[in-house]
Length: 240
Ligand SMILES: *[C@@H]1O[C@H](CO)[C@@H](O)[C@H](O)[C@H]1NC(C)=O
Ligand SMILES: *[C@@H]1O[C@H](CO)[C@@H](O)[C@H](O)[C@H]1NC(C)=O
Image (cartoon, rainbow, N blue to C red; front, side, top):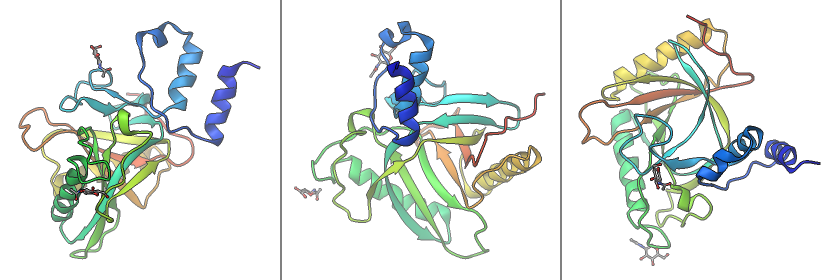
């Protein structure tokens, strides 16, 4: 039996959490083998590789584009390890600020190894749908661990910070520029939801991710996204 297909099959039963760098050598290997190796591994890598907008960190979360249209795109992400924490507030910005500080302390040395860990992109905020007016909600913020820490990340000192394995997933994505402030991100998540409903796409309706790629220092060409996690078979946007 050829090892390529054995790996491909194994992936669906036991996803690997290893990270590999794709060297030039991989490019020379047959397309089928390359595809299988891509779909079997967490992909955290070189910023120059995936996109023109993931530019501020050495490494970014890589993905495979399934399809795209004017309204949204569909991507596949491999399983990856993140460090997360949550914060509760009426105001999303307050919760995010508090959670961000805790995760920042983790990557700047508040971990069992005292390790300084590089910042990566994107930063995810898990946002519950249907938050009642002026009610608090719990927001979960996550930093992606760089490839060097995907296999063994040091435990956080702060017990409210935890390591999180995100399973592989397909996501519906809408991108936008500017600043990811509440009314703006809400507008784009509503737009994406509307487009998905129109396309009869099925997705997790309990939450979405606000996805940021830029530090507050960056004033131009900012890039943000909203993600809904695909349920069932991904539905591509209608052709224009
Ligand atoms: C990232 O890509 C550039 C250009 O291909 C290369 O020079 C560099 O070594 C790569 N860095 C890593 C960490 O793979
Ligand atoms: C984190 O915990 C480790 C051991 O558990 C300790 O050596 C280190 O000083 C702690 N770091 C900070 C910044 O509290």
